[in-house]
Length: 466
Image (cartoon, rainbow, N blue to C red; front, side):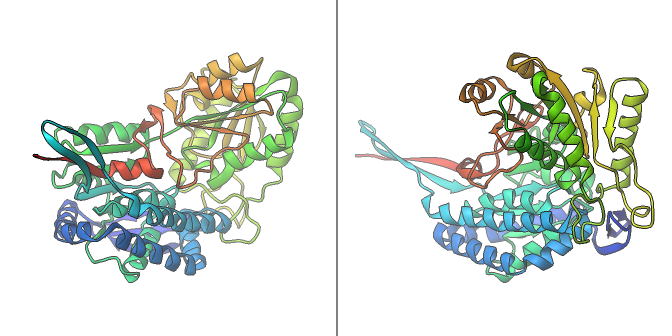
């Protein structure tokens, strides 16, 4: 991605070639988009919920019909393998369909009659909402914002990441072509410091949903202070994965590889710390090394690629610096990977081999920071008590998983770990029906499910005198 005074140039992370360009939006463009959203707000809110749902259903069908083209566009600007891109486009459609299916269920409640009379509550849209999304999963995370906001009757101003705006803009176009009225969904491309900041501080926007790093989330919270808007913050994570003695080792190894190296490790809920019970550690680590080394690395658009490049050269260089520092200080050993591949197919891109570290020191950066890339530190623990203690040591609390055949192990871990979502014998996947979000520095509020729909509505009480 490259910015000029009036344009954002989007580049392919695998080749460095230019994919496209968009107009660089400023704060005044956000204000114009907000005013446009305000003009459309009442008409959209007055539509029957089931009518809004029909438009979301039609949009989902249109997205599915264009899945292959959208996936190729997503791969070209983000870098992920084509198979992962197709899954993400399907995920966007799944989210729209879920919120379309529940749009007609929005209701309030009746209250017991009293001396004051009859009372009831009703749900109403908030008005104009804002959304700021990152580059790592731009289609899925757009769905998380657009689905509930629009189903609830709000209009939306959305800022994509500057390096991945093309898929988001195309999805918005498809929704408009499918019957979404003009002004309901407004896309403004631009920097976080200018366009993003205006979304957060604009007092005409009633709610903001932000997905990004914990550090940026803090700044977003500060910027929103005094605006009294609702805030949903889905921030970073350092998800632990615990492998118990009774786990299906082959299943757990496959889960670790896919859970860490999916999207080149650039997922907030990726497996970022792996704890294995001592008595199965040797077998597990041996199989993990073998499976990791079989992964095919390359351009995401090439057939058979299992892991594409990191999204940016800056991100890759930061990760290689952490690996070098950790190993040089004797705080870990590289079991496999840890280097930048060379050759004609790799030199222009941001590639890094999938990396597994062992013998990791508790005070190393790979355990205490969120490493947003294909680096998996593996530690051994004596049992569940130690696993839970280690899992809870970081400031993050997004996701966690435990791999076991024991209901007691699963229950003990789920009860004790600090995480917004806990998986048993799987990791990473979150269906649109399931609430998703974190604790501690991983954010506040929830995406997905009926909970997210509630976040995009306000409740009004009506009292009818006898």
